[in-house]
Image 1 (spheres, rainbow, N blue to C red):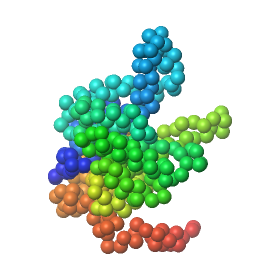
Image 2 (cartoon, rainbow, N blue to C red; image 1 turned 90 degrees about the horizontal axis):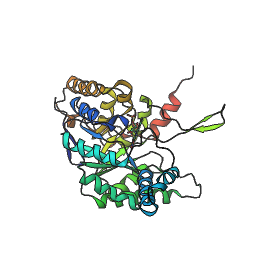
Image 3 (cartoon, rainbow, N blue to C red; image 1 turned 45 degrees about the vertical axis):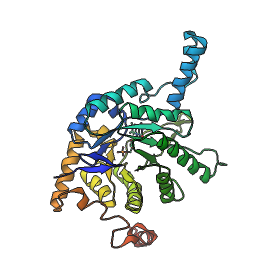
Image 4 (tube, protein in one colour; image 1 turned 90 degrees about the vertical axis):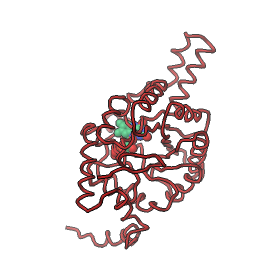
Length: 331
Ligand SMILES: Cc1cc2nc3c(=O)[nH]c(=O)nc-3n(C[C@H](O)[C@H](O)[C@H](O)COP(=O)(O)O)c2cc1C
């Protein structure tokens, strides 16, 4: 079965991509993912705040000598388990780009178009095949307009995309008034791919300790419905690749995203839950599913259930929503 595909002009042996997570922070895991049929790997994000933190430490060292290093460090929150030295991330990228045959995608996570953006060039120089730009902004100030938020997304995208020759994908969340319109603006700003969707950060409240707790739960299959809707709506309408992320647990889930029109399907939670070998399970399952349908390549099925190609596009629209609500019978 030929599972090969392209993503942002890059050749991939298969459509299943290991998305950014701590699992991808070790070279041996990346090599194993490749052996299990991953089409590409995305390295854990380098965060804008992490870059600024490193720069401030460097400045403190240069200006005041080694003894103020500790003080400079204390300005910043302690590193989380996932964040590790920016330089180590560059080393990993360099080694991975040298050792792997599949594309190695570096990830930048930021919300401004300030000085940190030259890191995109460093990614390129270190051998990244592409950059995934994760823009994750919580507009907690209610005076900030949606227009201003979108402008931020577009400006950061334009700044990164114009600073490198390799393709740039933008990973966004779903919460915009018109996600399709923003998607078009991001593509016009230089994005060659869109990764739909970021799982939004949703802190929890602990009623016993009266505190707001950061919480990270692995995804479940139901969460794929929102990205599935927007992949289906946008497929074939943008001059860019579409990557689906969130909720892929089984090969059937991957098939759903491909039917909706995704160029590649990303997975993290399932790999963290079941181990790297699950990448092989997904690939084999997808190949079996394709051959059971008499398909010999991905292009036979990709996008056949997208909004633009399905017989009844209302399936994606309000009419179906009304049908579903009115057709529900209470027990
Ligand atoms: C522990 C963990 C760490 C993650 N780190 C990153 C990251 O550094 N950058 C990023 O863009 N996404 C990160 N993600 C998000 C994943 O790449 C992915 O988009 C998300 O988990 C949804 O996919 P899934 O349902 O297959 O898990 C992380 C997810 C998890 C669970």
